[in-house]
Image 1: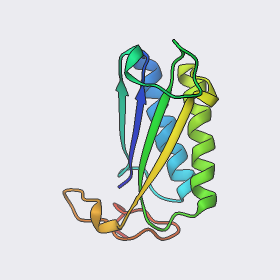
Image 2 (image 1 turned 90 degrees about the vertical axis):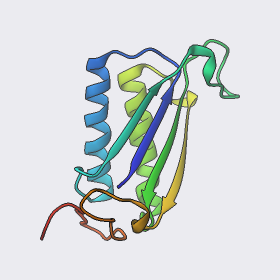
Image 3 (image 1 turned 45 degrees about the vertical axis):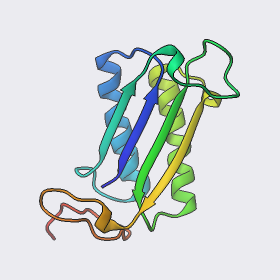
Length: 132
């Protein structure tokens, strides 16, 4: 169950947030070759002075992303996700691509838990809630 966290120092409107979450979920499923019912997204709006990135100029908006995903995703998949998410933050919220920063935290499947079960380690084509 990935937990995809986005911290942004800008006030966002509800319509854009909803479209963004759909974009994030859909791209995760496509790139990581998995279902999307288990994808958790946190979108935090913080005050203008609550985030700082060394390369951003004063008074520019920034976005920090921490992507908690299961072990087994390739470097190529993670890099494709980075590019997709940076593009999405720029497209939906107008934050410059160079003012965004992403970190990954990798976990074993048993570290992700839903009511129904702990998730197994990721395999290509995985859909953890699909009862095959």
